[in-house]
Length: 125
Image (tube, rainbow, N blue to C red):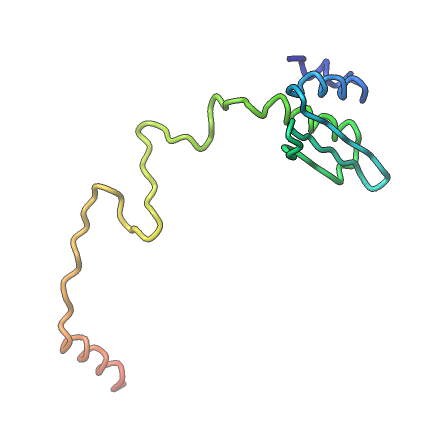
C-alpha cells in the first residue's frame, strides 16, 4: 500500500487507475463531476450498488473517498473501539437498575395507615 506522502502526489488519473486496480473482478466504477459536486458509484458483478456518494465538492476528494472504501472494505480492525475488554465492568441493561450478580433486597412494604397519616399532615397545614 502506498504511503500518504505518495498518494498526495497522485493526479486524478493516478487515483482512478489505482481504483481500477483495487476493484474486484467484474466490478464497475463510475463517477462524474459538475459545478454542484461530484458523484461516484461502485457496483458488483450483478450490478448491485455496493458504495455510492454524491455532492462531493472536489474530484480528488471524491476519488480518494472511493479508493479508501475499496482498500478498507474487508479490513478487520486491530483495536476496535466497541470490543469488550477483560476486567471491564459490564454495562447495565435498559430497565435494569443493578449490575448482574449484585442482589438488591426489595424494600419493605409500606403500611397504608402510615402513608395516609403522612398525607393527612400535609393537607392540614
